[in-house]
Image 1: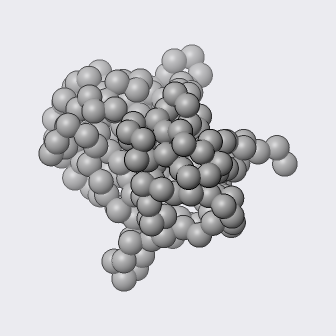
Image 2 (image 1 turned 45 degrees about the vertical axis):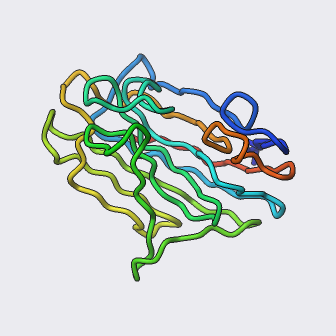
Amino acid sequence: SPALRVAYPEGTGGPFSNGLSFLAGFPEGKTYEEATASYTVAFDNGFDFQWGGKLTGLVGGGSTANGGVPAAGSNGWSARVMINGQGELYQYVYHADQPGRYGDWFFWRDENGDRISLERGRPYELKTQIVMNTPNAADGEMRSWLDGVLVLEETDMRFRTTDQLDIDNFYFSSFHGGGTPNWAPDNDSIIIFDDILVTTG
């Protein structure tokens, strides 16, 4: 079937010259208290992870809370998937309780508690569910699955402090970085995305 082939050129990094980024809102501008984003991803055999980079995720407040703009509970939040230089997956989250300027890291782990690394040249299904918290309460939920196996579960998230902030976009934001040259791949690299689906409720 048709799939999305995304290029990550040698020597490039950041969202403006590497990968692909776009916001996809819900029909009629609707927002939701709960949503799940899933897709299939495959890294080509020569893919250079370098220092790693972004994949995709759900967000609230558009794309305001990312790129070093901290989430304050009312300006936005984001929960994208990232991969590091060892091919390890983690949730990169801007939330009201993040400890610093940049997003918080929540590593995906197997049943033994070990970090999970992806191999090149084979497809994986990635899925993340977000359930918004009661405004200002730490009862939000975040779960992720890899090929149907639960690899992350957090039930004490505080994404927002106001009821004016929900899930409003799927943020396809895939690139090497970070924004400094250290993140750039040493060779042209490709990721194939397919079966992209967002469900609500």
